[in-house]
Image 1 (cartoon, rainbow, N blue to C red):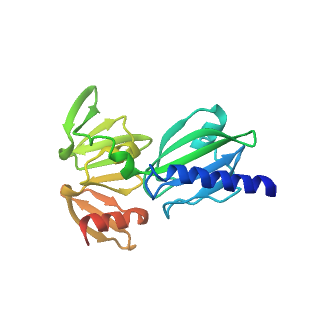
Image 2: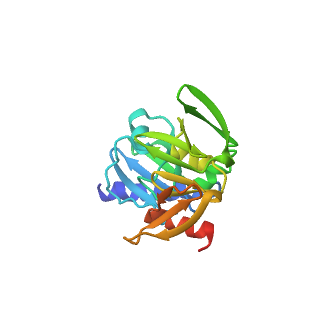
Image 3: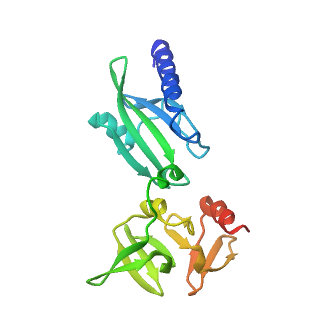
Length: 223
């Protein structure tokens, strides 16, 4: 990028931040991509990192905006950040070049706008069963499908873990990329022989805790 365009991008970006800061949370992040690369990034959260000049990933919000020139929004899962985030992308132009303005909002901002689930409807064989959310011990992502467990029974749901994490009551904690657990069903937490944390449930199920979610678990259970 030439110096003139770089200066122009910086100036226009600061103007966007000035306008947006009145309505977005302080821990939101803002990115601008021109053509196929990021030209500006303001991080409001330490877990989100982008480099100036970094190429736009296929399928990302910025990519979809650049391809369609339409507003795009999506939930960003743990493959990119340590917690789910909600991103909104807007088509803009910078010096007549197609660009994308992406705002990444924290999950807490989105959760306030959505009522927590009171129940989940799960499929078991050829039956669909509505189950009260507080009866679910844990939820698992396995082979690109989502399963939840009630008193040892397994049910399938079409809702993904990242969507569930934004709509579950606060007593559900994400402990792994593949697991969300109801803390009321936790019997104990301990390290295994390789020093990895394991959560043992009342029914004897053992679930791994990944390092990226360990602090969340410690904070929720105060240990």
